[in-house]
Length: 96
Image (cartoon, rainbow, N blue to C red; front, side):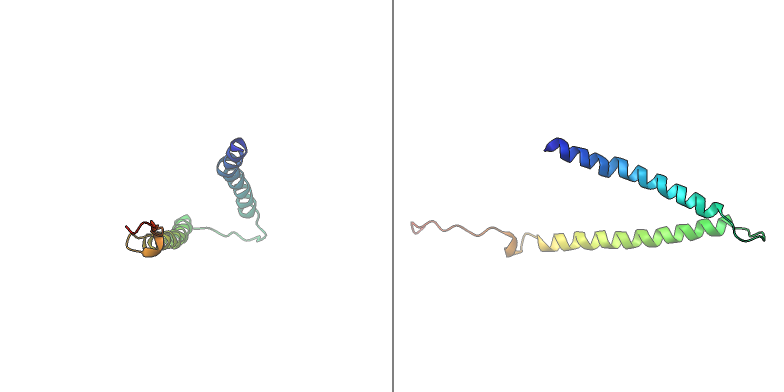
């Protein structure tokens, strides 16, 4: 059973990202390599790079907010003063 879990963990964390990056790089290369417009169009690299940077920062802030929110929820839910997180006290039947 452990070897099966190890195999799927290896596939999930090692093989799958490499495969996804390979496919995405091919798709992006094909998409940017095709031109249907006969006129010359120029891409300002500086503008394109800053656009990608801002998009990445927006995604990073959203992911960071979700992670921080889940950490705050878990810390609040399982805090020490919350009585719901403690196991019930066992009563001893001898009066003590």
